[in-house]
Length: 138
Image 1 (cartoon, rainbow, N blue to C red):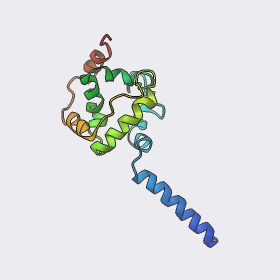
Image 2: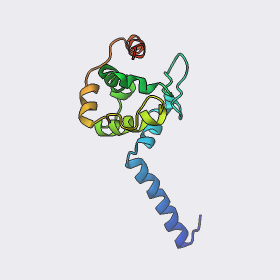
Image 3: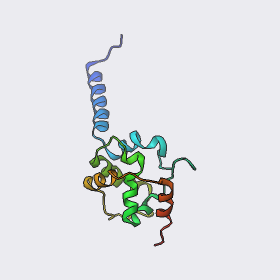
Image 4: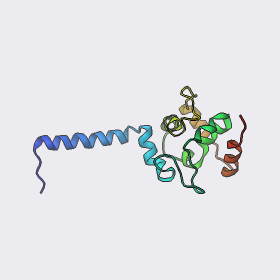
């Protein structure tokens, strides 16, 4: 049997509740960790030839409306259990976090309504569409 002083037990309970609140609060970094980093890795690096790298290139999709939609329409995002608002917050955190080279500080942030609209349209020919969007000249 473990014995704790009453102050220690309270501290453990507070720490546990704090962790639970952070996870339940669905902060964007926590949602990335729980829903994305298994495939895209902690730094957004992906796995060459299998899972795309997001580091220093995910912001390139913001060059067009189709590219913006693509970011939400990829299967891992569109089929996520996260709400539209949680996905919008995740995108708004992830883009400047993983690609500060291509994401301006004042970029147009995703809204829950926009995410809801985009995620309802599935992508056909994912790799080809990604290739075309990244080859846009600007």
